[in-house]
Length: 584
Image 1 (cartoon, helix red, strand yellow):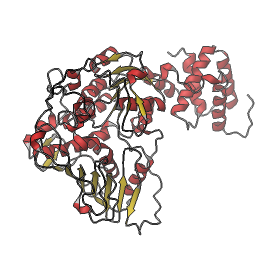
Image 2: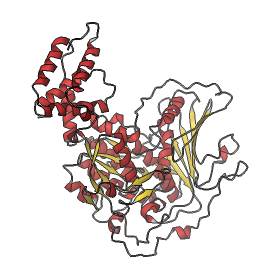
Image 3: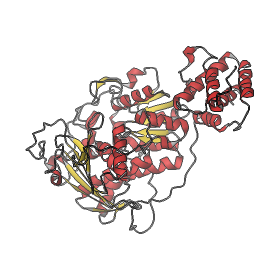
Image 4: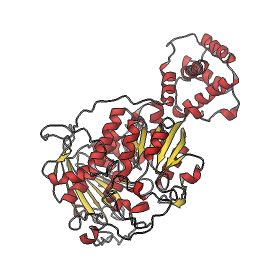
């Protein structure tokens, strides 16, 4: 192909490879991903939220669902209207009727081990780490809904296993990948509101009526009787054939099956029971406190204390709670006090400030030179406000300093797996683990009734040994988990460090080996452009139609992952040589 001499080498190589790839096969082949080049996922929790998550992953592209698991075949099949506005979600059992289906994730992982590259986990919290730990030990990448684990030991174990086995992980945190969250982090980290020493997060029941600007708290707070919160649900019902109640309970002690109700255990009330969830602080806390952790570079707290309506019940979480954590200085960044409340209670410190108190879920950063407030709801985050308003009336945000990753948390995880680069996923277990540990510790403080002095190396509240039962949890026979690596030494005076865990090389999937072989094969930095083009044309002419189609599919798939490739010629030649060598 004749090229004008004024073209640069980079322009030529990109154009030449692009032209070759897009002319050797019919147009209908382009843009499709080769089946052997998809990430094969197994799903643990196939109805409700699981159906939503997988639907979004399929829209992002590059994944293939190969196996499904759910303890409730009806929930996994039904078409449900969930909390995502008016969108209707089809249960995955109904969407993929021909795929293998399992009730027990342990059976699925064992039988489908060779077919699965990654696992999506969207069960109640008490199952998260049982499934994630097994998957990671098999070398499978993991996407897990929040809260990462049911207790602090589980969360630390998940963090350590992800590092040990080198798998790509992501915890689902809505809004983290949004543009406005990135902007807020850039504003705070640029110092535009000064040093931040205090941050507040409130989470009202957004379904409760806002009572107007003159009422405090802005929404009514509910009553609570600890005696009622001590009781399990006792109304026994026949267990329906579509539900395996024993598997739903998993590692927890037996609970009677009370029937189906939104406020009961199954399908969606489990968060309100200590045996299965962490209440509102574990639910919305992961979304709202995330921004504070990220912007202020927090990790492990020094202390935690909790407050609620009277003593903690043995079974049911209370209708409202408050939590306060203190964090040490981080380099030049000052110590931070972080306060949380949910259930319509609010902070009296903020009562007289000119804030949008009608916002049901929001966070407020207090800096030495200004304040920042942002709302989050069940949709996109925002708006964001800066105070005092007169000072920031003509404010210009700082230049972008954080990388953006289009497509949200699902595409991030997919691209991280495909490239073997964990940094492409913004909420790996190494980040979300300390966040979740902090939230869970707020519950431990409330349940013990003490201000806890926390040592993250020992995973101990050093002034409250009675907290251990909440930090560790207990498990039924056959559901035991490994203990996380814990330092064997006296309590440390400083926080922020944890024991080093020896790494193990995770088995690589067929897809990862393929992409690595392609990317590691390189061309000389300088070569004759004309001879290079002649080589490409000659090599393609000797290939079969099937090989050309395979090259086009791999090329289209690589462009999907790297749409801004600066040197397509090298990439195309690597793919061509790979296919010409019979993909060995």
